[in-house]
Length: 249
Length: 249
Image (cartoon, rainbow over all chains, first blue to last red; front, top):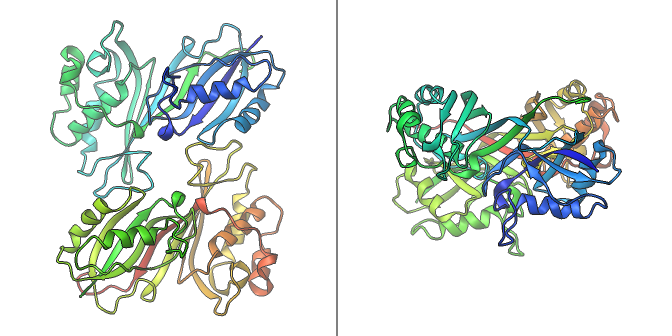
């Protein structure tokens, strides 16, 4: 039995998120496992580096699955793309060491959030960005963003109350690119809803409703109700997941 | 009666093109005229700077219509956006001089074509770009593109045989932006299918199937069958239309 590391791109618009749901809604996992079920030898059960909510996209989600098929790894994306719907594409596959685990072996995860900051809404970017019509102060947002860097208890930015809310943010960048403000985040892990709560709070900073230093206070003392609202899903992208190198990788 | 110049963005994916069809298919014109019909005083009949085929997008299509409503022009986009479907957005409106005509007064039109040039297909860009998996030689394409500049008979690049196939191309740029090759064209006018035939031919140049200088020959002596295939619609964008300035504009 081989373990395959697979990289996927998907358009989250018409999915009820990544994870298979009891109710049988359309999810990326269900589509992917249905495709794998058609490959003799493949175990139709995948584990992902991260889970994304309904409407959230991925440019490079990493999953693993086990298989006894003999398809050379570099051919797997072509085989899967014939079986997958067009809003999920396999980009790359490689044989992984047996101990490899898409979630537990993951060293870092990278997310991007795209805000469309212009007066009028967009037809073309409506399912790809969060439209914020009022002018945002990108400098203030950048100041707020810097507070997130490093190891913190992110419980004020988590959707669900639970234990273990300490995470480390390795990189946090914000750039204005024409009409867009793009936020790039790299961390060892992210809590459910964390990026969207961070972005929602930063937008309040950008609108002048809050001081950039409120982020420091929220990280030290805040509860979820103290932070800003969740940014909508369609601006969020799971960009990449990083692993320790292994032989041949 | 006032004449209004209106600028629109639309996602062409779920439209059978701009122009209203006898068969009652979903078109941008039909959606826009239905919206105008709900504004008392507005004549629900629009004329556009250009027509786009099914699947072709617009970032800044210009149309005109006549109206006796008293909505201040700067409020019109908001009024229309409440009546239009989300894949069409009104971006700007202004009162135009009575002689203004979106098609006949137009001095130049600008189109963009986006090619996704990478080995693997994209889930997120599938309705926004033409995916060409084989590597394209952007330099060769640029050489070919330069031949199109200036006044030429574009009949070898027109879908329909008809009289009056001379057009002037003012600007032609090609840029590689990461995994994309983006072609920007500005001309006094474009024949039906012209941009897609130009791009389809340039891609054959980029693949090494044709010499860049074939463009000069095609412009001088070619018929439509001699040029390359039409590039698919989803990579094409109507970007802007230019008019002579008038008082207050």
